[in-house]
Image (cartoon, rainbow over all chains, first blue to last red; front, side, top):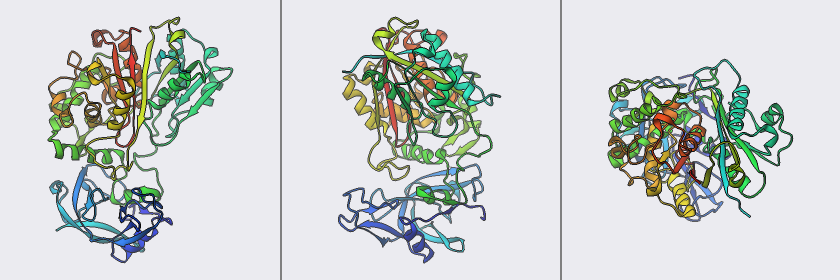
Length: 132
Length: 380
């Protein structure tokens, strides 16, 4: 676990990691057109508005795609599954994560999941997902 | 004024798994071979482009200095995410077409850094968008594109056997290419026996890392007619990306930027997929070639798997693809080898693997959110 890469928050992404440290999942939302914007950017990809604010999301979604990786990468011992979760708030609103309570070989597209939080450093909690 | 443009010379360095030489020396060997094929010398060169971005190659200035080129009137070192092997070729074709230079040499050279494991280019704290991937065990391109392939399998029923048929077909082509580093035939059993890298990709779904360089010389069609080799006309060179250019925010992971690139290619050339005699499709991973086939319109969307498994892309099939073995068996040269192979096919010089009466070919590069493509014509 200790060699797991950790995020380096910057002014655009700090809110996200501050929220996960409170065990909340927040995503930037355009206050003009209400589009959810991820990954965090200073401008809305839909309407170009710069008026974006973090809002809490439900944490519920489904597995959009996945891969089971059979070689070690920093912090992860093979085999392990990486998933793209599509959040229920918006079609195409996706994030990379892991499913914690399902063996890698049993992960499937369409699997309903919800967020859970795991500490990986004193100040960093990762948003992971469990089956729902 | 736009001038007609042609490829007039192609060349390789040695290509091998771990060559005991520098990437600079490999680059110069490829450039000299390409100039020699055209019957040109470094004194004739007045334009240059390359992609030295990953730190695995050398920039234009290195080649200017080393070859003794007196002067360049146009050059570009290209950086960032882009279809690395084909971008310099298209840029050079456009530069010659608009008269910025008359003889442009382009190259893509690769020397692997064996000190650094794949995907680990970061410190312990990861900046930018990668801070949303690397902490979740997702730092490698193979993983990102594996999730595109998996989504395609889910949506269209594409199978592992069909992915395997890509590797088997391209290896068969490589058996007829003396320059290919992997020339031992494989079967689907060999494919399924190869270790899983990241599902659905096995080792034989991944391009074969090599050290090597390829170079392509471009000049006006008019000048090319007086040179040593038969000219291969550049009919079109196009790029595209789409909305949300990101590895997982992309609108739909079952098609790539190649869809938009293909629209540009056919609209601007006035040609159509049925006109093609061969296709050299970027295959950094097997599925990319499958998706290019679909996105180019060579087969209907979602039918790439059966199309390949039925033998359509084999030499002798309806649209031979990756006749040199592609990157899977010919080595990872980021599609500069695809350009060279297409030009040589259109000149009719490919021996046992020659596609009969090849006149029009497409070359593609890039996967996921970036795409570039060339249309080349022989017998001009």
